[in-house]
Image (cartoon, rainbow, N blue to C red; front, side, top):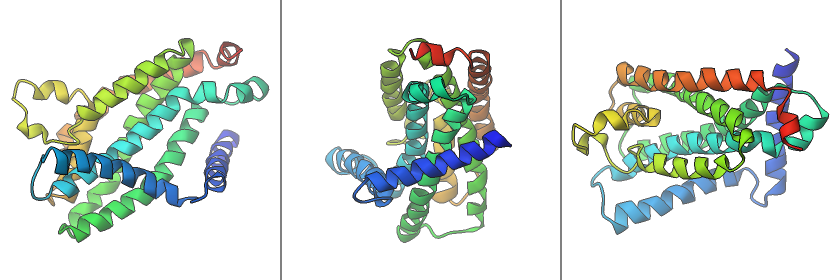
Length: 251
């Protein structure tokens, strides 16, 4: 119970500190992902003339879902090094450091996601009973984020150069997540390899609910969760196994 309270207090303190340090305060949580999405829409939607009717909603859905994953995982990969001074002075379970980053990003994601829902409605996709599947998709994504986040938080301290590898892999993963194109447009022989990326099935599930007004494929969601499960188990094991050694690595 003590660590649970510490985690939520740390999330609140981090969010409050982030707002206080920025001129625009919490508005930056909205503007930053919107600018990010606008850049890619200008490149792929207008510059390269990808997609067609409905491409704006298609792209925005993929980008908002991806940003929650990308921001959380990147921060988790650096979280132990970032808190090196703290963990040398005060003991706290190292998995809690990753959870603080994940929960903070989840709060910011919820704000942006509500804006996305409004935009999608304005673009001709009104709410329906199918939107009740959204919490299930969010919980599935939260598990995937936690799994990859724990794994990277656990292994990056052993070789700090891995942080650069992670950044480049996430960029590659972004372009292979079906954000800018439909996976249905790929040759059949390539599809099984794309679905090894758990974000592919997740993004398609969000689009099914928000844009196509149909239930997500639970088979596809289960595949994404099964891909993420080994990362969760291995990451949690390493974080616990080397819990007391991480502070010494930061010396």
